[in-house]
Length: 569
Ligand code: HC1
Image (tube, rainbow, N blue to C red; front, side):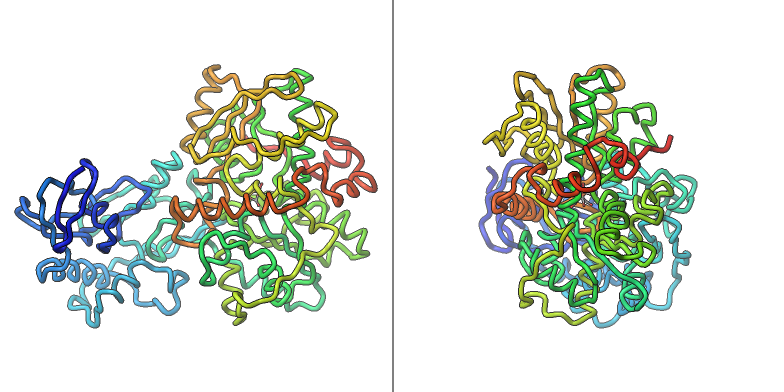
């Protein structure tokens, strides 16, 4: 360990730590913009400069290493002046529409300007960069005038997601974050995962806001507006509304949705159980009939987009099962409409998702198995938070409410879909019972739990050895796909989720997100699982009734036409 002094305080830090890491570990705050705890530091914005012995000038603390006996000062006049200069220069070239900006309240630049007490921008009136807003992407909107060139979007897209949609282009004052050939974001090979929006410190990249569509459906007396809520929303929505990360707010969320005016409130967990029935049986069918293996899960739309774009030759490995969001939509406008005696043409099916890519998934032309758009509008956790705030609901004090039936019951297996490994674990719980013909006591598959980006295990189920892998982030997914292509991956079943940690870290989840916040959300989901009396998808009584009374058997004709899909080459 290294011993140094920061602002007169003795601090110990590992040998290769940066000054910023040492300061943060000691509770000393240094403001940052380009720095992000989960991305490689770049030292680009210079906001984190400090004075350090041994350095001739101010140094960027996010990249400058600690040294034995170093004396660091983070708030001298020189440091404060430099920091203010950085922010004033950024603001001089930044739109001043903060009051109307989608990111208002969550904008790191706005917060830093407030923290520094900036009251005047000395360089106002100089040259400004002019760009048009790019709304061509189905899930994301870019406003380059709000870009502060921190490069976080470049790093997350390249290093975490392996997609490299963005890079710096031009020079000096003309520098921009650009896509290939400066094309619109709707024209490039984007997975729509939204991780760029999640790390963007300003309003330069935000999710496409669809809340007005929801309000107008709710206020249309001719429409019946139903809503489904994804597994990972219930452990993150609270953060949007002032609660601790990982708070389980299922009941309050249902109460809020009812208060907003939705006619029926259902749970995507119901259709996650349905997905397990279909996907689990598809896996067993492939395993016993010489089908294409490894079979890979297909519920994460950012992942599906990526494999379609970059590895179309491997599409036969994808399960044909639709995602729970889309299964829900197809069942809602057929089975539910019939059961409730509602004209499906009057139903507006809304989903609340932690994911920006779900917007594009719902808009796929083939997602109309019900004869209508299966899902009409998708909003993210952040958008629902905005609707609740706009409606003035006192979220923390709302009494708990319950989902409606018959699409409102989900098992513990379904709720863990929201975290990496959860879909695999849920599938194993059902596959093991089907293979053995028993009601096995083994429910927790600890081998597939964890946060490593690629995990693998060999499991013995009913005398069969099944080799599985669990992968999250698209960069890690690409590595395993390369191994499959090279014939070096002898797995039978792989789960892939596009976002870090799975849907708990989805691109539409509350900001900020980091490893600690994801851990809290994940624990919330496992708490939901263990508190549920029903832990296995095939035990869901609403699912049993659906098959018994209407759908027939898993992979049957009706199930196939409503619940399975195909992919785009
Ligand atoms: Fe997900 Fe899924 S788990 S993809 O992460 O399979 O978005 O939460 O809703 O559809 O159930 C997201 C979450 C979600 C689907 C389910």
